[in-house]
Length: 203
Picture 1 (cartoon, rainbow, N blue to C red):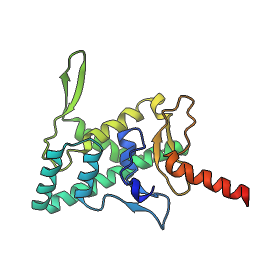
Picture 2 (picture 1 turned 90 degrees about the vertical axis):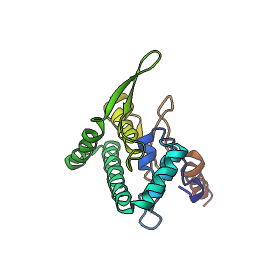
Picture 3 (picture 1 turned 135 degrees about the vertical axis):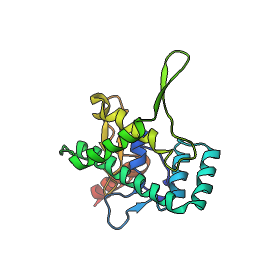
Picture 4 (picture 1 turned 30 degrees about the horizontal axis):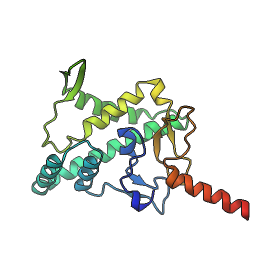
């Protein structure tokens, strides 16, 4: 992904956008992690629509007062991100999921799902995570739920793919009718592949 598209959400599902918070994931030279600080995690979460303006500002202010706790939350969020990535990556590559990754993810599920409440709506019910808005990890439960929703549905899971762009490594949920999507973004990796094919044909 280019720097200009730093927060381009192309995964089509929250948890996949979360794991895509590393540019050029499969490149040793260009690989760059966006979550270099807790503030960056909050900024991404705000951009992703998980938290609102006031909550984002409040969390950043709280992090300034309790930096060690904020840093610990960042470490845990990154660990969870990489765990979710490896679980989906193993599926897209046809490999067996590492039991240790499942253990870590199940621990996160157990932790956050303890706080779930059913909230009545006009015609149905919705799930609500009873995590205080000022909790450092208040952005994490919706990400966990997003991953669980995909992993527990064969129909959903079959639509998770890995971008075919060189060194990209991003994952996405293929919403095309015939499941023909190959790139995280046609405007980015897709165009690079197109240009490469054109150059090779001329050469």
